[in-house]
Amino acid sequence: MTVRPVTLSSVSRLICRHPQLRSYATSTSSVNPTEVSHFNALASTWWDPYGPSHLLHLMNPLRHDFISFCHALKPNTSPQRDLRYLDVGCGGGIFAETAARLPSSRSVTAIDPSREVIEVARQHARRDPLLQEPGKLEYLNKGIEDLDVPKEQEEQYDVVSLFEVIEHISAPGPFLKSCLPFVKPGGWLVLSTIARTWTSWVVTKVVAEDIARLVPRGTHDWSKYINENELRKFFEAQKGWGINGGVKAMGCIYVPGLGWRMVTGGEQWGNYFFGVRRDPET
Image (cartoon, rainbow, N blue to C red):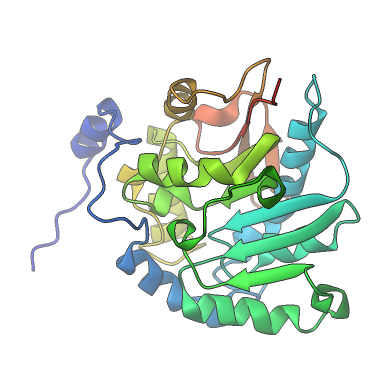
């Protein structure tokens, strides 16, 4: 097998392309078996705060902060209590567990296509009696396409989260469209991902994977990264999303020794959060 090295010229060509929210898909599922296999191998270490998921543990508080920023946008049409969450690509449950413990949350449904990872999430949740209350936290070994599309608003969610997921999807356009019906009017779809830039290639591939080994090699495919303006254009083309300032983006950077920090205007550097509100019914 011939291994082709990533060169600066190849990175330059990829930056100039604009394929990321491509609409093609080879099947009815967004699940990539290679990605599932990669995360299956990490399942047993998911809750080790110093293991391969170390950076996800450190990032988790910022996820909640970003959702709070979204809910604070005016006009505020989102409820502040009794929230229903759908966490897509939940992994071992780092975000799902903390969301379920919030006083403002009614329930969290968390889904992931990896059977091994979901089992780790279920086992960890059993340690907390609060999470065993009926309807508080439910883990499902499914992809988004496997869920029944809501027919009534009561079946939809106030927050649909896709944290560190979309850069692992081969056809992000169809995947996002599959998620949209699950957000209730006035609710938010929130995600975190990585911009496809020179800096992100250096930081996430060269430094994080090859030099510092902060994450296992092969965790990311830089060509699948999505720029913030690409997400904006995608949602501009979707009827019923993002009116009256219902779009929010925020960059975040990892500072060794200090952890993750949000950076206003830093969406072009690397990691960033993105949220879009479904237009309220009129």
